[in-house]
Length: 378
Length: 232
Figure (spheres, rainbow over the protein chains, first blue to last red):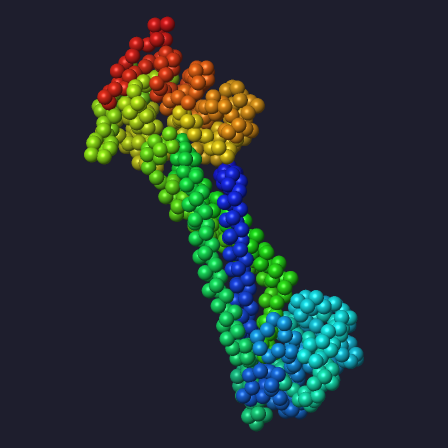
């Protein structure tokens, strides 16, 4: 195997322009496929029901959370519904309701109660989280937001007329934790007086063993038809509408990219085999089995696919990580997060595509009429 | 009575060439002893290379039998002939046919078809290259070697797996006079040292002069030529 790898490598090195162009082409395709798969994964994750996910209560008939207005007092009504373990009121303010990668989503919460409500799933990466309740204008910034905007502790920034200072950077189990800027109710109400005594939505955790649908029905009944309650995933799917579906179509884009990659590699393989024809003939003449020679010819495709695929996937991974893109719409955020398993899969898949693309032309090249081939190469 | 190493009986091979049927081998018979050096001479197109291809199992006869050692070649499938050739035959081509991206030693090791290389094989490849005067050229690629040096590498490749038969198709055809004489000498002495039966197709009478027996191939049949070695 080592000598065949050496032969394939030497053949690639002998044609640096062809090999380089193929690797770059495969790399670009792999990067595209990798990015598309990350988008698709983000879309799938957004709309997928998670075990233990909270229920979200919004004003009935509203799609955009920032247009939902419920009296803050509804919190007590919801808390009294049998089967409700905890409820927290949130005020959502966004700088842009439309689909945007630059919008800021502010989540106003009770600073005193934040850690009781959400502490189990939040991890503080840096800073002083208690400042949320004690320091006016303090914000807990999700790490995805901090990374994409290159925010550090103590930085102040303004968005949607709200000016805050980064008191802590937090990580959380949910994308909404990582992609939001968390502030105290008072901070938000000072900037947006219309939000006073008003909640945009309530986040509810049911008691263990509660059926979410039945609990949602009980909550809506308790609020007298004023509100609509649904699991977070269903709310997110409804709010983001076609965005989640568009993101999920990234899978189709990745498939198209894979086909383009296979065709590119097959073309490179045909060019390579045209020049390798004499070598394959000689190797067959001295007794190397056709199956081995087909494999040898395929190794080159596999190597080109692996190098291009690994390079492209790694590049896409680095870009995804550094860009920390958050696509927001109507206050729901979809974070495009690095998935190392996906990067590795694209790299391996590119190598397999290289082998696959080369296998058929390699097999044909290896099974040609040896007598004629020898005559032609003599 | 000793059995011949190679026995060819009533061999026939024809090809279609446009509307014509060409029969370069037509009822040919021959027996070669183990370790014998035989030269096949004949004009271009007389079927010398066809005969070599049949002996190597590269091509299959239309009729007749070829036995080499205990193997009846015409009964083997194409795959079985490939496997058999890998272990029993060493081939030397007129144009050397080295792999130009590999160095001399790696080219020699390619002669080990159908199995992986071991440390002992590398030792043997180096020994062969040293014996052939290429000790300081084993890391050179074919493009860095002269024609004669390339053919020596090709001879080493043909001998690395210790074949019982070496078939050489115009091995000196691409070399000048001195180079041709040296390669002839090297090929014959190495084949004799290995105990292999050597069959050389050639236009070069100096090659046939060094052979144990020589034959003229014409109209599909072999005619023995007087042995210069015996006469000498």
